[in-house]
Amino acid sequence: MITLQEIFSLRSNKLQNTKVKLVRHKDSRAEYRELLRNRQGILAYQREQAKNVFKGCDYIVSFIGGERKRSILFGVFSVDGVTQHSGKYYYDLSHVPEFSDLENRVVINWGDAALAWHQWYTQKKEVVEVLPQGYLGSFPGLLEFVLDYGELKRLMENPEANHDWKYHLSSVNGIYLILDTHTGQQYIGSAYGDGGIWQRWSEYARTRTGGNRELTRLLDSDPEYQRHFRYSILQTLPSNITAREVIKIECLYKEKLGSRIHGLNVN
View 1 (cartoon, rainbow, N blue to C red):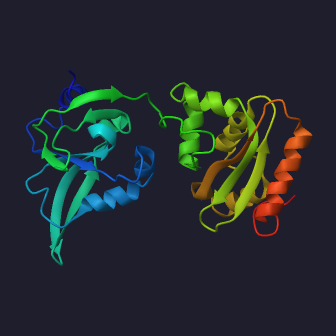
View 2 (view 1 turned 90 degrees about the horizontal axis):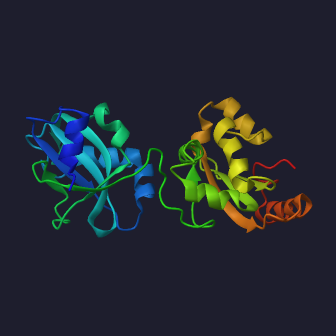
View 3 (view 1 turned 45 degrees about the horizontal axis):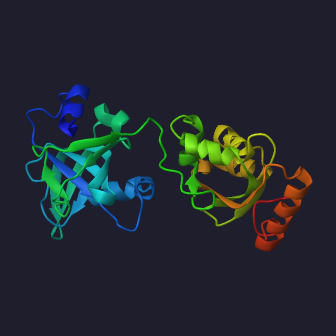
């Protein structure tokens, strides 16, 4: 059995001879990927506590809880101070970069004390899996996911770590949706030809706009605007369908959803 403590000691001796707590965040309604996407929310949750749970800690090691006691590493943070206000404790936490390459990759067995969401580091934790760099998670199905831009870029930059994603997205043509979460406007596009949806979306990962006029306009106004984009598939189409047939279906979706009048499509 390889433990978390053994892997960490190979990476850095920073946690040795210090007081460290293990922290497990769990939401039964959400998968790993959904919780990890909400990084700022998790950081805020860690910082604000009803009790002085990190009293005497030099560091905390945070995990996101999953099924069957599995938990994936979220990050390591130093506890730099604490203040008390209105009956709550607010911790000054700083990210420890020495363990960054293990984040979202190291999966441990939290053990039988699943309800104890904070435990001392002296309790050994078995490492059950080390996921490949850039791993996005198991492929949920062609119509069963939504990706933000950061996830899309990570997916396209790590095809070997996400071979199931690449296989399925390369095998089909389809109609896809890009949602601007800032305004609620929609862009509807289509993918056909060699490489299917994977090939088309790789252009979005590389250029952020895929050459689309309205998306380019948004990026011109804010160079980081792609952080508002969410990508999903509306309908899959067989690989042998003609470009003309695909475009006809794409136009129908634009009419149904009004993406020309109230959205980001201009044709």
